Image (cartoon, rainbow, N blue to C red; front, side, top):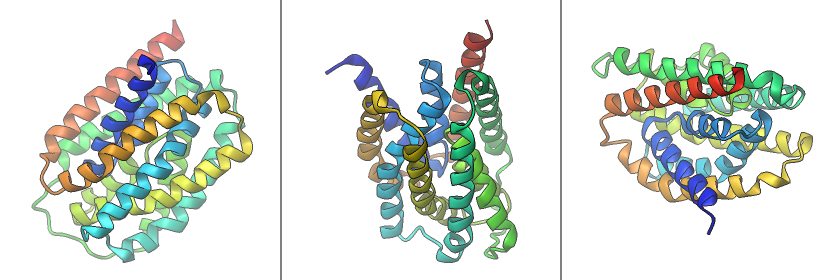
Length: 251
């Protein structure tokens, strides 16, 4: 088995462990690695989301079985997220990869900063807010769009914002992961219709295998893992890799 393929499997595994435990950063993490390896933005995002169809399905099912899903929150997020994702995927495939790559790297850099910032500002003792108003739907729309454009961002945009507003962390992570399957499926269908990326099937299969192995493990860890320490690590990692991508693009 080729070393490159095993690297994709490892990336998929690590990214899904992060995503299942934090409710965020599978796409941001894996897309950052893929861009740093020289894969074009649209192909990288398409590969990540094709793989995520399986991993988010397993992760969402795992959270549902563990009782981590708030159905009222899912109803607010799902349809707006799908709409935003389809629009973002279409926009991304309409722009030349070499032109947009620096901007995607900057976006991922900002997402790394957001994760790092949230790690120091989230207050687990804050009174929980169980009301899910119309603003949650607008957040889902923005999260879906950013997720497709940047190859990731659904979790950093949606999960971190909701938890920061006082939503229950475990239920938010589970609900956002459950909704993500449908958002990812819609984005993937859009990419399949608008792109030809047959040469990247090795990337997709590698990410899928690694993510599928990690998904049920990560769902269990969501109840036990030290979230703050992991968020700090993930934020710093994404920032460093994004700076490296920007350096390689700009030199």
